[in-house]
Amino acid sequence: MHAAQGHAEIAGGGIGGLTAAAALARRGWTVRLHEANTSIRAFGAGIYLWDNGLAVLRELGVEEMVTTGAHYGTSIQSRDGNGHLIGQVPINSSGSVRVLTVLRERLISALHHAAVESGVEIVTGSVAVAAEPEGVLRLANGTTAKADLIIAADGVGSQVRESLGLLRRRQALGQRCARLLLPRTDGDVPREIEDDYIEYMSGQRFLLYTPSSTEDLYIALVCSASDMQAMGGYLPQDEWSRSFPGIESLIRRLGPIPRWDDFEWVELSKWSSGRVAIIGDAAHAQPPYLGQGGGCAMMSALGLAHAVSESGRSIESALELWEATERPVIEHTQRFSVRVSELNDVPDDARREILGVAGRLPRIGKSRERAATTIPSGVNAPVAVGEPA
Ligand SMILES: Cc1cc2nc3c(=O)[nH]c(=O)nc-3n(C[C@H](O)[C@H](O)[C@H](O)COP(=O)(O)OP(=O)(O)OC[C@H]3O[C@@H](n4cnc5c(N)ncnc54)[C@H](O)[C@@H]3O)c2cc1C
Image 1: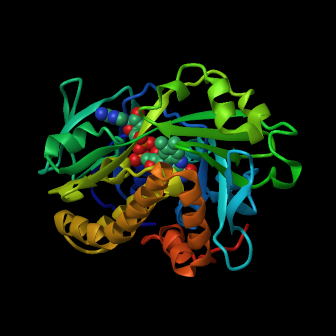
Image 2 (image 1 turned 90 degrees about the horizontal axis):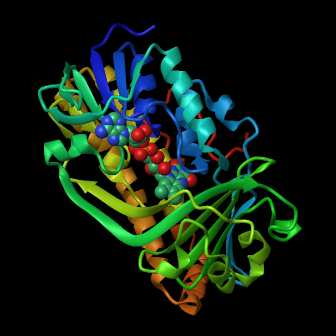
């Protein structure tokens, strides 16, 4: 049992906010979390989880709740529009990284459970609009809340971050994405690869095939933000089939599109101001090519709880220590994913060549895996990186 610590107010009940809330409460903090929506819920179909995120879930006591029934692919493959293999990376085998996929709903429910079990007070329908470095959170209903620690985990469009003037860069990367969930069926892709994770690439269009359980298939469609023929409230199936003739039957199963999201890159001058810390997409949004935005949000949230609870420093100084510890690896991942996003602008032949060469350079593979396998500070249990469960 931890000694009583201070009080924290958190804006945002997504992956970052819920992780921070549970991790602080488990270290003796009283925590109140404000979520703008009327309930805690997930958006976005499936999610890839790697060693770093799994270590955080283990630390919060909910790893099994998330991973039961999860899907473990045996490789991540790149294929062209006709389905021909361009490159592949083995995963979940001895010596390779561990990565699994689950429904987002399952991850959010488990983090919600961890927060509630640890005594976090969750207020839904509560919108945060600003914070002050002295430790004040301002809410849209006109009230304020004082705390020893304020956390802004209100996502890429963070209002709390805006109120503190910490933004150095918020850049749309010129790509949009739609995410869909559908039942798995025979024949979506050839049987021998149906359990793998497959990135199909054709011109500036990209389709990610992700089994997320025995029944669920998560599909992400990416295109240039100026590719109006590819977007719509109902998928233009003829357009996508023209780009991906090798998986036309799968494309014909994709209909209504819930929404198209921009890929963004966020960078701050500093991750904290006084007693206010910024975490997750609010601090370091990245394009999702490495499937690491959520993992980084969890790492940063746990590292924060660890620093403010166990460093023996003042809050302001603990937040500086936290940033110095977490920021280098997270920004490495961010930069890597931005570089990968640039591959979408490269003609097919050149891309095939680049991926072929990159696949043969172990340094690139190691660099790609660095964030995924960095065990976050605050993880106490021993971790066997790369061992499938
Ligand atoms: C297409 C796509 C695929 C991705 N795939 C992966 C993947 O496979 N693996 C991975 O790890 N990551 C992935 N990511 C990234 C991941 O989704 C994000 O990095 C992660 O959700 C960030 O969590 P967060 O808590 O910082 O922000 P969010 O998930 O955006 O949560 C913010 C929360 O704050 C609430 N909120 C917003 N404003 C306010 C306010 N003013 N007051 C109170 N509450 C507020 C919102 O309602 C929301 O609940 C992907 C992203 C995209 C776009």
